[in-house]
Image (cartoon, one colour):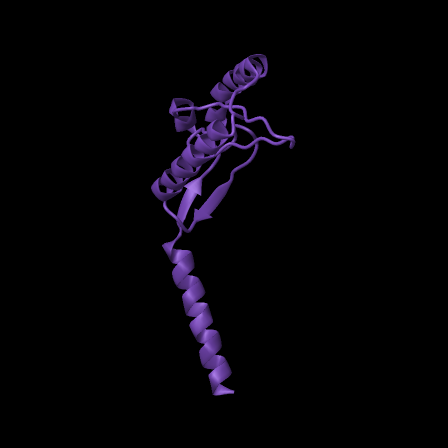
Amino acid sequence: MKAVRFSSLKGYLLFTTLLTACATVQTTQQGVIGVDRKQYMLVSEEAVEKSATTAYAQALDGAIKKGELNVDATQTARVKAITNRLIPHTAAFRQDATKWDWQINVQKTADVNAYCMPGGKI
């Protein structure tokens, strides 16, 4: 019985240590969109952005090698035009987002999908 209590105590201590190591990030401006949202991050913002930049570069490189990046100029221009109208509104979530180095690309695939990586990589 003591082993179970000790194991539970170790688990609790590990959990509380991890929780206190998390940084609280305010992800929306209170009252702007009616949501006061905070997140607890296990990884620093800098580490996330560095990882996203690397992954985005790899995705672009792969799409270029396959001849799938921005192949339809009309579609790419349309996606960029829509996105450029949306970017100013990101300030409701993060004031610094409008100053990110936004990169917008379209990859030709059989799937209908879209994603935005940290730092404005679309």
